[in-house]
Length: 158
Image (cartoon, helix red, strand yellow):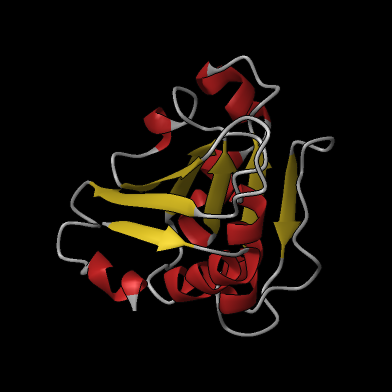
């Protein structure tokens, strides 16, 4: 599924729509250039899931847990940018322990967290690079595994 987003507000709204498709145990991998909108999308996810706390970039803490304010799953937000890769470092974060009852969002997770589950949502955010004020982003959302096979991702474009 490909979606064009023209502003940070639209990126956050995309996150709110995506949250409606998520359930405990889901892994969402976010990839894109610095400043592409990964954290903005995650902020919308947090709003849509109804979690506590402001969703901000976890760059310096590596991972943040946002408990649910209601019946929904907590959100675990991970920034894997500074991690070397592989399961060893990710296991130190206990992601595999909380995966079954949380929604896990990993920024910069490509090549680092795929072994956690065969079922995952891969979100790639493309933006113009260089000296530009262009806020247009092209977002590609791909569901992998049996969990995502029956899910109609076209609802994200509405």
